[in-house]
Length: 399
Image 1 (cartoon, rainbow, N blue to C red):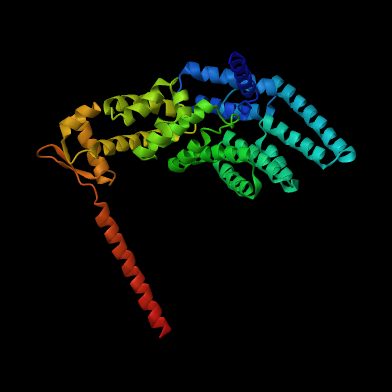
Image 2 (image 1 turned 90 degrees about the vertical axis):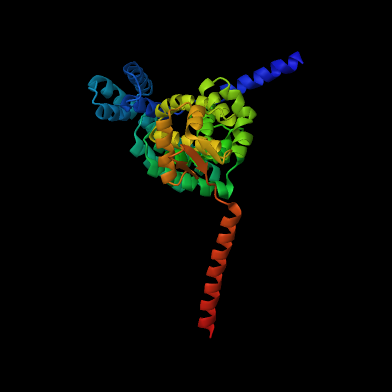
């Protein structure tokens, strides 16, 4: 048993060491968000600037340095910029020589590998335009489906790093087509993460949640973000997308998710408070989760909307157990004031998001859940009428 334990620990260590580090362009994109967002302190912004400059200098990112200086209004260090440009030109020349040698003395595989290396160089130094041009050229000459998918993933990451959603959408669509033609298991799983991240950006949390849940047990996209981050994204998107039974089965009882969130008290409280109907605790932790979302560049634009949707989920779940309940009783359950709750419920009722009404005289909330059978009956009648009309029109045309 001891030998087996040691072997398992070694295997786990090897697996961790084999993980691909996060793409530096995506790290820089996160730092840029910190620098531009009002949700971070001066100290956090200074740390983000220092981290950005460290990566720029380590990778000789002359084009990115010029871009970030222009964007943030920083004074350029012309000496540093000149030195990095010289190194970029020398590296590009070295790769050009490697491409020429491969064309002359080697086969198509070696030529392609050298061309990919050059495209990656431009991506590495933050020259989005040139990197994209090179990747597109490689795609046109690449035959293998798997190799094409790999290049498409690099383009998607490039789009994500520079907040180019149009580019991301185009190549996520292309990747889906390629995967259907012959993508292997690993590439299919990677695509789920790329697509889910894009869906978050366009606020399709339902579709994103489904893909994240499918990725929990198979996640390998560490070049995009960590497994822990992906689990948090899974929870956040699922909370407003899944019904209570599905949420309990796929998130609350998921061993993979439970293992991660036990180290994240706020996320764990978010899950358990809704599951256990502890609404006051839920409303308290929503503030912390909203703050956390505002510090994430993918979720920040949707934080206020998500917070509103979470309140609707909680109100709906609570009211589902009652035919009527006093406003004061419900307010105490949620840990809020009567006036706040009255205003909240009135707004959501008017918008058609809650199936209830408020008796303002007696301060009682009365639920008016739609009758599913009557709704189905009315739907069948309407479809039947439409079918009869089409039959009548067809009979007239035939006669």
